[in-house]
Length: 167
Image 1: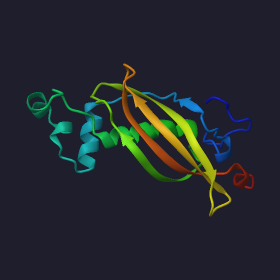
Image 2 (image 1 turned 90 degrees about the vertical axis):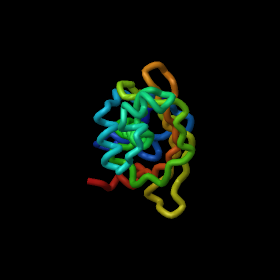
Image 3 (image 1 turned 180 degrees about the horizontal axis):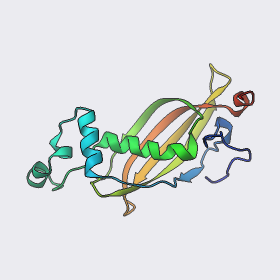
Image 4 (image 1 turned 45 degrees about the vertical axis):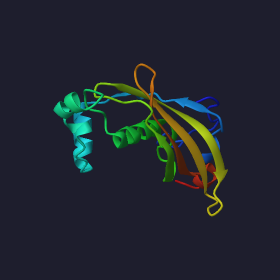
């Protein structure tokens, strides 16, 4: 991240509210190739029988894509999950919401995604002095640098000052 925090992160690696600089851009270290098994398991675990995700014959004969699309909610979860190690591991109190979710291009089995996160804003919590709210914009790209997913996420984050007394 541009402008790394001057103080150490949480023992698990997450950054505290004070460590985030508005405008900072993080290119996450982890990447992931998505598979047919990912698509099948996620679609079945969420009781989503959409043939667009789980039926190769249907996709080959009845869709413009000709092959299964990755389940968009899997893509959303993976995109946010990839960001956790670099940003929020051990320092998130809760996710407050995800908005402006878009899937501008398809993601297919066998594609590899990489993720970036922009710190879009932050403010101290009005109700809890030990916390603040950070707005992230997560973006996922295929191996050919095409944007496949984007969302804005509001995270309720621990403040470093509250952690000082932690043992």
